[in-house]
Length: 365
Image 1 (cartoon, rainbow, N blue to C red):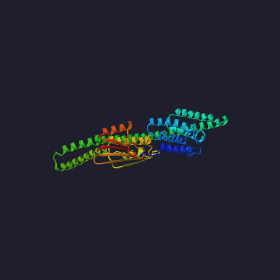
Image 2 (cartoon, helix red, strand yellow):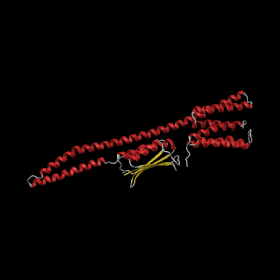
Image 3 (cartoon, helix red, strand yellow):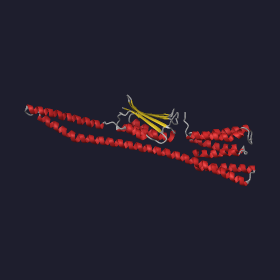
Image 4 (cartoon, one colour):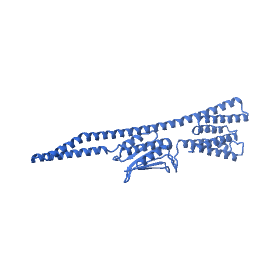
């Protein structure tokens, strides 16, 4: 089930406002120009199509519903011309246009709505001075509704894009830090092997040759020195191996990517002693980045939880938000590329939109 977001609340508010405007005609306080049952049906149809235009997901459905809403709004006000308050419905239509169609189309709708108001004033024979004031007032209100709604929507979009860019920068920073740490570990391991390891190997060979010389006392000292040299060589090799297999900083990297995001409460639960190589660490960091970015841009979620656990077969990342779900989610280019990244590592990734949006990514040990 979809959670109410800003669009849904806006639709609910407009529904309540429209019902309040039409109530005098519905209860018989103001008689319509057609039978009340027919007008009530027309008004109910307007409310239903207006709500669809606000909350529909598919653009084509939204465009069609909006066009029908415009036509029905004209029919509603033209069949109850004595009720000036119904013109507020035209203002609601202008406000809705900001979230459905481009601004130029919205301006055309406002011009047509104003033409309807002029026609009603003319048909009723209202005085010119009064008509000019009323028409100008409703024109200004419609323009203000359209432009303010458009500015609010653009501000929302800009904020989401900035937050998504912030997530991408954090992910890049985390990956660069991890790459720098890996490069430094490899450099140190090479230095240890080339300098100390080579010298100890030469020392071992020299002592091995000296051991075969005459003199029991010298042989005992040489044997002990030989053993020390071999122990040192073994320790150096173990140190090199540990440096090469040092654990990644995945917990810190993931928390850096999704921490303190505006408008999104993201939490990370991960085993702090999880050991992954650089390639797998990069895959999980990119997964967290793509998931957080999609959540910000598309789901209107308030919470995102990411969990990384090691099981008997490998390492599993699970991410779930409380935003919009979809029974049959269609991954975009970002999620498709993420799936290819995990498949290249021998793993897999799945998506589930039945309750919020859930991503499960797994790589083998």
